[in-house]
Image (cartoon, rainbow, N blue to C red; front, side, top):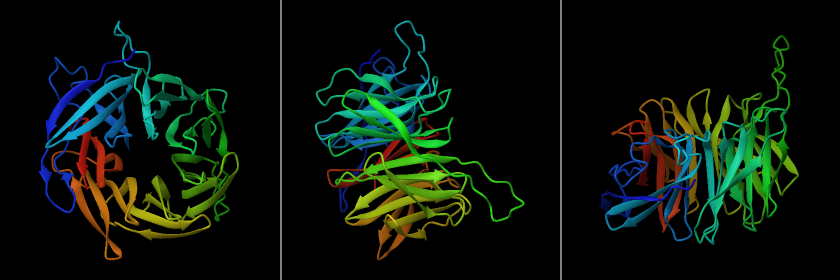
Amino acid sequence: MRLAASLFALPVLLLACNKTKLSDEGTVDSGPDEVDPFAGHDMGSWLSMKATADGKPALAYYDRTSDALGYAVGTVTGSTVTWAREGVDSYPDENGLNPGDAGKYASMAIAADGTTWIAYQDTSNGTLKYATRPGTGGAWTIGTADVGGGPHSDAGYWASLALDASGNPVIAHYDAGEQNLRVARWNGTAFSGAVAVTGSDYVPADTATSAIDAQTGEYAKLLIGSDGKEYLAFYDRAQTALMLATGTGSSWSTEVVDDSADVGQWPDLALDGGTLYISYHDVTNQDLKLAQGTPGSFSTATLDTGDLVGADSAILVDGGQPHIVYFDGHANDIKEAKPSSGSFTYSKLQGDTGALGYFNEIVSLGGANYAACYDYTSRSVWFGGL
């Protein structure tokens, strides 16, 4: 069943500075009940944000109230942001029956012609699903992208979708049943999935300690360069390390980027001028880290060393400099790491009005940068300018 879009207006303050930005938070769960069928829903976890073909912010997210996948597009007009929301998959049917739980691990990409692709997990069936719609609009087409490699499907975790040079979607995801990293590719009519990376058992230097079974591919993040080269950052739980797989299709070269501690969860990727940037979490020290370089040659640095910081990072390169938003677990805030005179400054982006910083996203729209995250207090999406 396809639900109609719901429109509502939310006033925001526009400030004059180097670039126009939204300073007050915007949410996607307000509006009168009589016109908004989604009012009061717990929406915004497993958030993915991209720019539409005409430069608007678009959100794909998990609706916890309905165990479903939702979608919203924002329009900024003067001092007002208006969000058009709709249900995509797994909302109750006309009889009120819930068809299952789907929408976690949402990841979205939007082509230049407006075609939208969303990858997400069908939790009820343990599979990777996809939803797509052409730029001309209409109903969503929904299908299964991959079922994993085990005898019982338990895949679709940490889905990450990117478009190749031909505009075809490629989806990386973690197969918990087989404990490896898979990639599903669109062949024009359907997806075909295969194992991309299989981990190795980790044997500690202390021979008295038992080997740790291979488990690799969690927190997967896929980026495809304009030359078609694919980059996959992910966490290897056995080695407690940040890994990178590089390839051009079915062949991958895998390397350890950082294994200095238990590092590598919540990575994000950005590519600029041939330099690859990877932001990620140092779990041992609860810090934000950054790796930069090229495959086979990376330097790593610890950025923010505040209390319980660095999880769920999102990175964007602007003017050749990386900007990062991430979670402050001590204060329950969304923070920003911003380059300044060859170093970084760290500041709270938002959080006074609630527990923010979960499922962070960052996007550039019309020359300005914006962030979004799940507001755990209001159970909605916060959206604001950097």
